[in-house]
Image 1 (cartoon, rainbow, N blue to C red):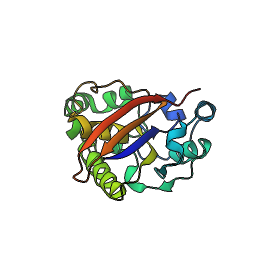
Image 2 (tube, one colour; image 1 turned 90 degrees about the vertical axis):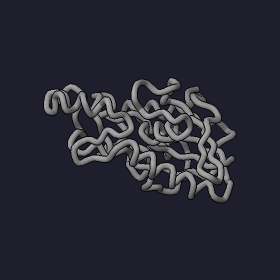
Image 3 (spheres, rainbow, N blue to C red; image 1 turned 60 degrees about the vertical axis):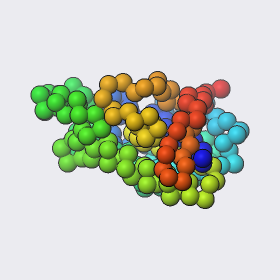
Length: 194
């Protein structure tokens, strides 16, 4: 099994406003930069190969953490289509019952002009298998949707209802993958905070 350490980027203004940002390239907010400056990647992961989403919020987080990641476009956040930039209340007001019906679809939810979590999970799985092929441990600074995709691969969670484990987003989440693409949880919620 090849170990994989996943870290979510620090907060942006849209995170603070509870807006879906998806593939909109939002930088870290001032508060987000300050928060990430207080994080430390545990020593055991520092020598691993590191990757990061090309989104500025992930790249900034990686740099602040002292990592020198390879850009990995496969691990950009889910594309929320017409819902990007909106709060859940704004989406509910604009799309009403349709939004509520789609929200019950879990992994097959597809926003207008966006992608489904199942599609995200598929691209994450392909990327994990490709990068893990040489057996070297690696990490990535990515997005909540990418880590949730890994959790779905490891547990079979269909993203209906809450996740099977509580996730602390100021943490490292470690998974492992074998040569057949089977993903397992190794350790969750390894704190980045001092």
